Structures are given as C-alpha cells and as structure tokens.
Image 1 (spheres, rainbow, N blue to C red):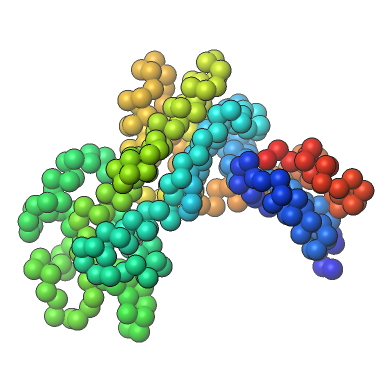
Image 2 (cartoon, rainbow, N blue to C red; image 1 turned 90 degrees about the horizontal axis):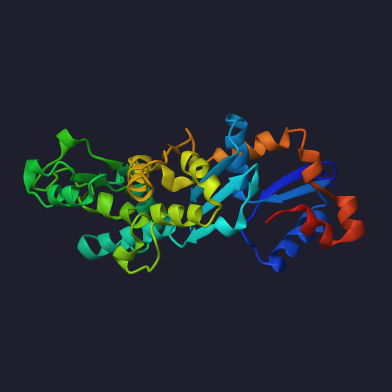
Length: 311
C-alpha cells in the first residue's frame, strides 16, 4: 500500500512486444498500484541528460553498448527517430563468453566461472588503437612483450578478488613460488573487445559499431546528418574499456565525409548516465505530462499507455 502515492520511471527495450508492455502495465498499476508510471527507453533518458547539459543542441546519437546488445539511436528534440535505430547483437555477455572459451582452450577450464572471467575482462581488457601492431607485440618473447599481463585468480579464502600483477612483479617464466593460480593474458586483452568493432572476426555476420553509426545516420535527412556526427554520446558498460572512445572516433573519422566534423562524448560515468537522466527527468516540469496516472489507466486500460509512451 505504501506505493499508492509513488511514481515510477521504468526502462524497457526498444520495440518491446505489446504483450510484455501490457503485462508491465498490469504489474505496475494493478499489482503494485503505483500512483503514476512512465515506461521509457534507456536511450531516451541518456538523450534527456545530454540535452539538459547542452541546451543549444537539437540532435544527438546515443550509442548504448550494454550486457546483451548495442543500440544506436538518433534523437532530435528528445524524440527518437525510429527509422534510424540500429541494434547489434554484441554486448558484454558475448565478450565474457568469448574470453571464457579462449582461456579454456589455451590455459584453464573456466567455462563455469562467468563471474570471475567477467572481472578479468573488466580489469585487463582494452580497445587497441592499432590492432595488427599490438598483435605483433603480443607474439614477442620475454621483456619485449610489453602487453603481457599475469592475472591472479581469486581462491575466495585469502584472495577475495582477482587482480593484475604489477609489471615489475611478473616472473617471465610463469613459475611463481607463491602458489597463486595465474592466468597469463597477451593478445586476449585486446582481441576480445575488438569484437565490438568487427563481430565478423568470430563469425557473427553483423556490422561493427562504427559502421552501424554511419548506417543509422545515413538513413536520416541529409541536412540533419552533420548534427548527429557532432553529438555522439556513449553509454553502457562497454564504454568503460580503455581506448574505446578514441578508437570509435578514429574509425568514424575514416568513414564519415571529410568536411563533416565528428565528435564523440564519453560521460564520466557511462553506466549511470541514463539513470542520472531519469533523475533529472523526474524533477523536470514536463514530467507530469509524460506519466500515466493510475485512475487514467483504471478508466481507459492499455490504450492510454500506448498513446502516452513512445516505446
């Protein structure tokens, strides 16, 4: 009953199935009895945050690369342009699973250790600026291989969380006296995040993020295109890979016509960027206009939500 005077903002995927949207309405209004609700896409909250930060801008392109998918969504005056939405079935889950397979094949059987390998990915992986050059360095022996890292796996008794050994403490032979369990990573560090840019490397027949951005922008009116290239916003957990923004900007620069400037913005906290947008939205004067009230839903049913929410 304590939710009777509460409003909720809840996110859902783009083009969500009608049956799921209706179930969501029923759960929010009939089971939990919220006073009012707003169902919205994550990107819309991210775009709201961006427009709040830069009120002079009219357009932005949200690139949301998360756990399961990567979405590229153009927004103009806070409205998403549906014809420009692109989805890639590449996300953090795929990267972690691929890293598990590589390590299981080369070193240790870790197929059941999703949590640990996810931590390894977050701690040591990065996006390479020059893939083939890094590949050559990763094949070198001994001191010359500046990319090699030893990762100490947790044993959950004395080592609660895995960590990367500092370069000066590494034993190049790989034989440690301390009895810790070690993963030695070289080309895995950058070959795994490379899938965001070239999914075809592991047989996924899809375009990478830079191509998807260009594909999305080219489907929009020509006079709007320069504005989108200048306002690309990165959100989602994969944006935290070191070198991700620089590589994306460099690849876009080579794909976009030379006379159009390209600017890629990486927020300080890309994971919570949309949540912060939701916080701003909840305090904005337009919020009351966007929500559906419980009384309204009880009177008119699902149709009122369909009209109000732009999913």
